[in-house]
Image (cartoon, rainbow, N blue to C red; front, side, top):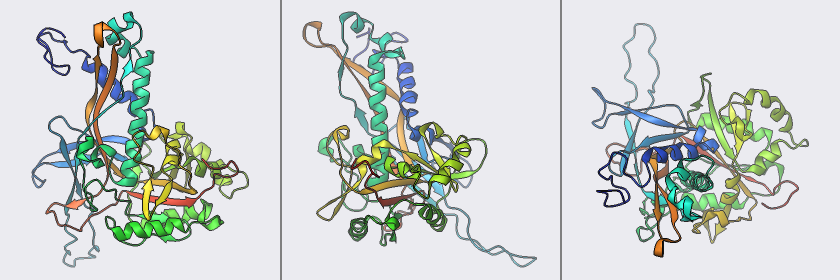
Length: 422
């Protein structure tokens, strides 16, 4: 270690005496986030303080599907939502009526650490040049770390949307998690509040209760191989109406200032859109030129009725499975990369403004370990980040009052067109 350095993460007596310099870590952080469409749909939040704001200040978010905050101290951050003004207007010179109270709602997110598996640094001279290896964009080791962190970034987002929080928050404390309680007990998943099932409409019930989970299970188990239970043009029109009904605010991305909703889809749903025999094919062709202006066009997105649909390959791994009456989204196996789900229920994530919350430390820290006799050096990266589905609660802590107004889950019967199970 450099002079004066006691652990890998502390600074030595020199100005740059870290095993891995932090500038390199920050570059890695930006690189892995923007490899997916979700990275393009994520924006940092700002904080303003002033008269009339809560003591912690008020969040001023850029319009985005994922609101991100960098946590520079401690392990917890609070997001604040000021509800929209509501009430009837006053006409003429009549006395002005008092509108609904502009209540503040809060959502807290806790930071937790994730570490990649260790990968060997091959060859002795590469081991001596480990700093340069990591800072070189063409380096194989750097590429492996970036690819792994990007995969985990997407898996955490999918877990947060479907289960309520990323695994590092839901796992038991014995497994290094936070055992977060979202309403059904420590570490128990809570499905999205607005759940729209093709052919049967919204699932009834209150999110965060066992009865609601049962109703979801029943509705998804009733999907069959009929046109009404599949992704069609008529469903898109119904979806647009449902978004308005549930008051899900759009996201304004780019410079054109038009609000849109971004929908991550099981890739087989998008395959159905481009099928020439399907009613959606004409809409898809008309959307191609218009879709070039949206920020995820490079991910083969299409746009219909201000809804931007883009495929997410890993959503196939989150297809619904009934486990003795319990809803399973994906699996809790240690490595989802090995997961294959055989199910005819395909999913769609409808994301409005602030659909998900993310807390992170703003850096990737890289460590290396040297084996016995100076042989077998290996390297690993760790990040501090956590995701949660946006679930707002009143500032006075009242129980049973939760507002989910940023997202909607959709489910369809999908057998994979003519190319079999995923």
